[in-house]
Length: 171
Ligand SMILES: [Ca+2]
Image (tube, rainbow, N blue to C red; front, side):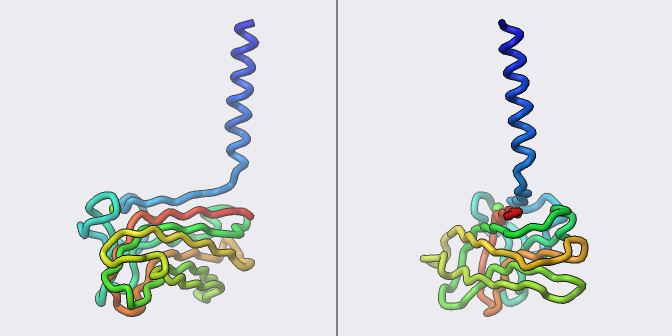
């Protein structure tokens, strides 16, 4: 009886793992400072981050925050339909618009570009707020297309960015 129970448990565990493997949602998280997927790391410093000292700062010198850049075929060989992005932001000035950008480039040509106004997620200056956006991608060639995700202070606003989390979805 005990052996049957063990066997049943093993089958259950195997099923759980194989079932969960079918779920496709590669996630990239960063509390900053670990790997090569992240660009513009020169903007990162001890500026008083969301949950620790470190975050990325954009200002009149740095227009683009730390962000994510990767070839789509390195994320998945199958087509990704959607991306969910969240990050934490702190703004000094709420009157200047700052954007969270999601873009696809194919052979140095833009095939998708969306600049989300992050100010509408922020109620007070100099406090951390969470920004969440979803984008649907157009058709693209995974082996020739690069995704880019970052904050752009097109108005030279001072903004702090931390804890970018990216989920790619098949549907
Ligand atoms: Ca941080």
